[in-house]
Length: 223
Ligand SMILES: N[C@@H](CCC(=O)N[C@@H](CS)C(=O)NCC(=O)O)C(=O)O
Image 1 (cartoon, rainbow, N blue to C red):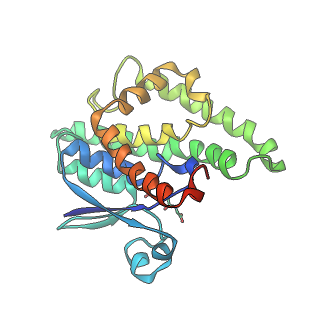
Image 2 (cartoon, protein in one colour):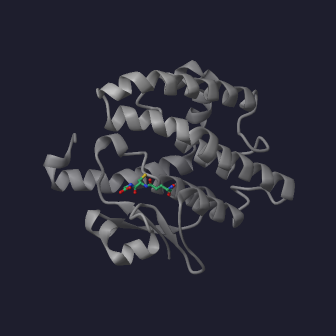
């Protein structure tokens, strides 16, 4: 059985953003059955888990051939086994890899810096000084990204691919802000991706254990 590690519970700000979502979504799009292995802080710290994921993070992915960490690499690996996520021609595959790395390396660092300030350091003095600069740089990057998308529906080859999984996951990390509304083509793109049945199933499967944990431990709800 293919297996993905995920957390048994996370605080509400992280629910729907934990990176096992990317892998679940890729597997759903590819039609690959899988199970999840839910972990908590003790597992994260254990030598056995560190042997699988050196930083104690999720996701880890295992199937009968490979054992991997890093969500982008895992999604790329799954894509290489499924033409639902990557075309078969070399030029098309190169474009998927290009946009997947663009999401991770050219968009995510700015989104991550902004989200990190908002979610972990809100109200701190240094954030008041730094956040406007980060938002300005991010908005420039989003404007360029929107121009690059142009009239197309999807980033690589104008066909849904693994690149759209990573790009959407990155852009969704702005949903605590109204920024994306200023880039209507990107907002519509994210909505289009979130409307895919595979995304909905993946999200529901990530959230289900959180709801179960909150039902059995009501003190967790709303945290
Ligand atoms: N670059 C890694 C990052 C993984 C990551 O940041 N995972 C987070 C959840 S989204 C995590 O496990 N955080 C807990 C921690 O760092 O202790 C990937 O994409 O897989």
